[in-house]
Structure formats: C-alpha cells, structure tokens
Image (cartoon, rainbow, N blue to C red):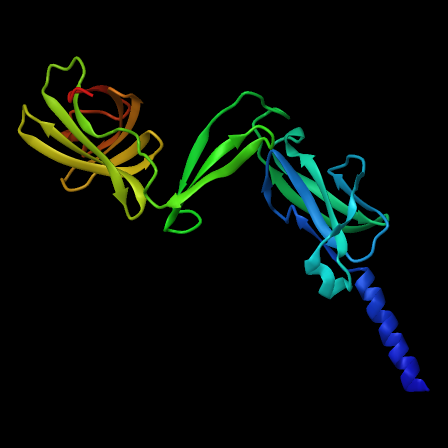
Length: 271
C-alpha cells in the first residue's frame, strides 16, 4: 500500500508543478522596444493574467489562446496570453514590467524603451537599408509603418542589389582658384557599400586615393596609400553637389588644409 501512496504523492507533486509552469516571453530581460508592440507568454493553468508597467495599475491580459508548443509542458494547448501595448507612452530609458498570475507575482524584470518623443506619430514616411542581414548573402529594407509606429521589413533581396546614392562622377571645388578634381565611385567592398575617391591636384601634379564605408549619403574616407594621414567626410547634399568636411590632416606642418574646413564640390560630368 505504501508504494501506491508514494506514487499518488508523486503524481500530485507533478500536477502542482505543471500548474506553476509558464513564461513571460516578450519583452525579455534587457530588451529594447519601441512603437506599438506585443506583450506575450504562456501559463499552464491560470484564472487571471495581469501585467504592471513601472508603478502603474495592473492591466488584465487576455488568456487562453492556443499554443501548440506548450502541449508537452501543460498537457493541453490553450495556454497563451497576449496583449498590445504602445511603448510610445513611456519615456526613453529603462522600465520595469511585472507579471501577475492569479494575483501572485511571477516575473519582475527591466527592459529599455526607445521612441521618437510622441505616443503616436502621423504622416511620416521613410525607409532604411540594413545590408548583410540576416546573413552576408542578403540585405533588407525597413519601411516606416504608422499603424505599428515602427519600422517593418518591406523587402529582402540578395546582397548588393539595392541602389546606392549617385556618387559616381567627376567633381571640382566650387569657387576655387586652384585646380583640384575629385573622381568618386560608389560600389561594394566585402559586401558593404563603399565609396572610393581619387583626388587629383593639377596644380601640383599630385594624386591621392581615399575610401570608406557609405552610410546613406555620407562616407568617412581615409587616405589609403600616401604618407599623409588625411580623413574627410563626404556628403551628397544634392545630385550635383558634394560637401566635404576635413576631419583631420597629419602631419599638420605638411598640410594646406585644416580640420573643420568645409569645401563644396560641383559635378563636372553633366549629370
């Protein structure tokens, strides 16, 4: 008789453990969130699920959605809970979320909010490129979605197929008494958008080559081969104009340009 009692106790303990099984899956500890997102997870057996953000009031969360992946842990599948939340209502920085199951605190963790300063933004449009994601063979385009107040994946394509800014061309310094030309070419290096620039100083018959990673319409380019350590920032401000800012030039005694100086280059190839 004792073995049967022992087995009965084991079964009762196992059932009790199943009742307490569950997880708050989103947001995870330390996550960065923005826009209108979801708070979700699962619990094997609950009458009421609630969440609390910081020190605000508890918010009831719908419970009982089907989660086939919980069948092994719970013995059934109606264990999911999920609710939408506008994280734009929160200030930028760290916040706390607590999960209550049948009035008992089950989870207490922090996460981070990054938003654009208003709970709901209207009329915005924009997209951004994420090269080399989710792997080196692909690039994705992210497009702003007003309904979710966030960027969503709008395009996935083979790496290197997205258009680059039209940097390609020959440029001359505007209103300069000297004769300096830049020839620029936008392409790819190791799967990254890359800008190569050749500077030709016709007054001194000097040639220098620079290159650097393209980020949007800007690139920080560095001297590749000469003894000078020169760094510029190039920005395509108009289809026919490039603004060049001197970041540094070493050795200073041999440079005829200074950090902080800005030069305007105008297109010479008729585009």
